[in-house]
Each structure stands twice: as C-alpha cells, then as structure tokens.
Image (tube, rainbow, N blue to C red; front, side, top):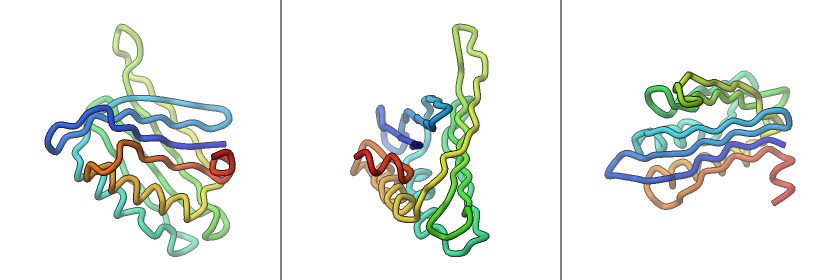
Length: 142
C-alpha cells in the first residue's frame, strides 16, 4: 500500500490552498499549505514521462513556509519499478511546533507517475480538485 493525495481546499486567483496526505503501510502524514497554481503545473510537467533511464531521479517541493510537501522520485531496479520518498512538513499542536514525516512509497510504475503528472497539471489549471498517486497495490484496490 502507499499513496499521495493532493486535494484542493480553496483557490484564489493564482494561489491554491492544498491538503497533502501521504500514506504507506507503516506511516501516514497530512498537512495543508498554500502554493501557486503554476507550481503544480510545473511539477506535473517535470515528472511527465518519468523515468527515461534507470539512473534518473527527480525532486520537487511544493508549499511555502512551515507547510510543504517534498517529493524525491527514483528508479528502483527497472524502469517500471520506481520509488518516491515523500517528506510532509507542517505544524503540530497548540504551540504550533514543527512536525515532519519522511518515508518511502514504493512499487510505483511509470503509468501511475504519468497519471499523477496529468492530475497535477489539471489541478494547477483548475480542471480537477484532486491529484492522486497510488502504488501498484493501491491501484488494484480501486
């Protein structure tokens, strides 16, 4: 199991307020943050067609301030088996202490990454409210 879900909470001109959820069999994390719509489109374009080679990696960060999501894609063995390390940062509790979770979501195939790429572009252009990346086991549950 493993997935990342970016949900549009609200949008004002070129700014989005997103909720980011990441989960794996052992961990899960959620945070909310602002980001520019164009950042989502750029992220989607950047991972489009990933991977092209077995040694390729791709990193991207969205969000600002204390709330953000950082993504690090890498190939694991073969082109149809990728891994994502996701870092979710946010605030926790009444004292607004920094909270952070960092864990892998593995067993991603290139078709799942391609679908996430398309969803990110649609999210950034206002044509959808959710961008979701599911690994092979989560896709089978749908």
